[in-house]
Image (cartoon, rainbow, N blue to C red; front, side, top):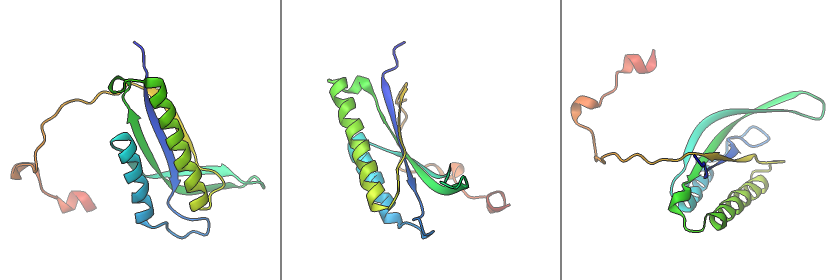
Length: 139
């Protein structure tokens, strides 16, 4: 089986270099841009990224992961679309590096198998399928 679909990941800090939280509107803008380009985006809201500084000390910070997928079967000119997607992700990373004052922004691209399994949209679930058990949620 030929695996040609792609997953694109962008790792973005949640805090600036002085420890102040980046506004959620800034993060939402990234999600909107990726959704506009790829048709959707998944966000992992918290991931720890660590590296060694020049003195060899381990530095860690909390990040977000934006991941988007491209199904190769939905595209006429796959090579052209792949290049467009790569340039798009690189341009966002470069822009965010400057905007958020980062020395670098991590991106990755991987070959994956993408399938969209059909479901049935419902505006809301029936009452017997919803509810919050506050004990289970908080304890």
